[in-house]
Amino acid sequence: QKEVEQDPGPLSVPEGAIVSLNCTYSNSAFQYFMWYRQYSRKGPELLMYTYSSGNKEDGRFTAQVDKSSKYISLFIRDSQPSDSATYLCAMGGSARQLTFGSGTQLTVLP
Amino acid sequence: DSGVTQTPKHLITATGQRVTLRCSPRSGDLSVYWYQQSLDQGLQFLIQYYNGEERAKGNILERFSAQQFPDLHSELNLSSLELGDSALYFCASRETGSGANVLTFGAGSRLTVL
Image 1 (cartoon, rainbow over the protein chains, first blue to last red):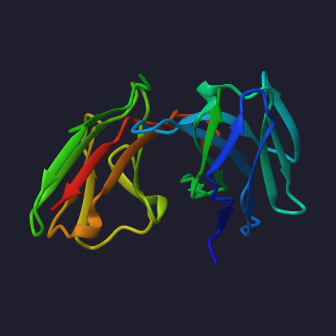
Image 2: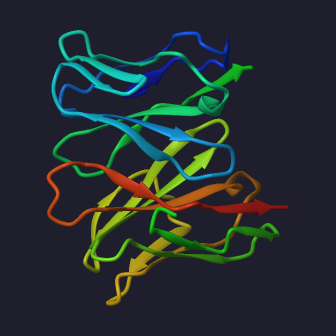
């Protein structure tokens, strides 16, 4: 079993839809939770960073962490074609490297 | 531009050959991380260096090696290449003194082994 499992997708939604992306994890030592966005043939870029359970909002993006269930989510409101990318959840603990999910490819149709 | 520089962007080589990928971290960052991204395995951690010293190893094959030089740039050496080594190789750096695990990635080096 992988330490981090991510819904593989691909996901295709119409413009304006609410998108929900999810990951589960098994390692209780994970303390930091992130979402990276990766456009085709580019490097991953940080989208959201959270440390504790709860919600964190940044514009149209909301990251949610539930440590008791070992479950994290990313919500995208009013999705735009420019949001079309692969979204990677990532987690870390006392060890400085991050463990990534396999990524969910999202396409937002105009 | 993330500030992390990787060269070359693309590399095509044959099985059995050896290649070197180069990374320069963001100015001031002492940590360098190498990740491999393939279609079936996702983003896999290979190795981490901090100020010239190896700090952590992940799923790095014995045919692969890395080092970080005094000027903080890093090189990932891949030898006896196999078809399965075809992948995107990313370098990332972490802000020195930051308690967070936030990594900033370069644009990657795409390796194709024929």
